[in-house]
Image (cartoon, rainbow, N blue to C red; front, side, top):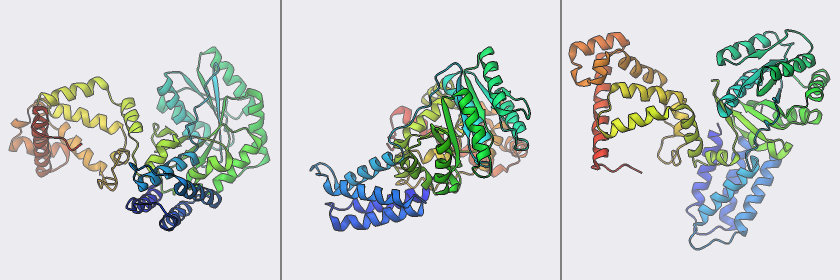
Length: 435
């Protein structure tokens, strides 16, 4: 997400870092490049004009302390204004109430049904509480079946009454939730191909009946500037409390995210980052600004790791590394935990300075990772614990069992041996790490 915009902005900012002083002349070229980068990313032209004017005024009006590089100061100004443009601070969900009621609305094709299942999973994991999904899209063919399938996949109950009146369904669902001690009720409402009176009247009726704590509008970020009209159209009829931007992992220019809050005053609360059921993240303006400008997002990286990695298992592996006893069993366990974090390319981009180190263009073939896992799984437990016993006949058997070649088995064993030697050097203090 935002890759093209990030590259353009970073290139522009890199130039000004070489200047000894910020002047009207040398800043004009930078502002022109920033303006073009934002417009090409599909940021609303009014937003672009206001953003560049503020940045220029602040940059020229700042007194630069002798210890601060003028270029660094300019980068800070751009970062701060990007953060403001994205909303300033993250907007928390209002999940008070017993049960807390959340209503998701949106046009057809925005990813609303998938998003509500992701949100239920997110709330359960984050707060360790019990969500109930409610199927109120009674018009779209297979909408109820889709939600039920997602609920089954996540082991989250779905309340449905078929093609009944959506207002009645919601009332009954809340009573059911209270009786069965559910903490959250998440309502999947009907969508249309466009905003119409019939759709809005139904949504308003549901809202008036249950007065939900949150009304979240799900928007496809690939819509571009038309998304602003959709948000405004919904917000005119419903008091939207937030927006969920989906498909930010796709081929999107990202401009809508930079325009939403400024033009509609509706905060972005979540963003869809992958098709997987854990591919929903809280939207944090400051962290997002840092990602766009190539500053990384180490906080999100640590949070993601904390959520999915088994701490005891990780500590056990780390201890064995220090003792030089790390074997292929431990390697396989580590590999499985890393896979839970998602595509490694996305994680690398969160590392501060990744672009400078040339890491942002790294492509890690999932097939290669699968081959490595298959090779290790084709070994016996004894071979994994004692890789030194793997000679010619064993290598042939392992290659056949994993659908790979003897050369690939050899390569893995060599790399593992090198890794063990490096770990031993580090633990003995004979090698300095590059950070």
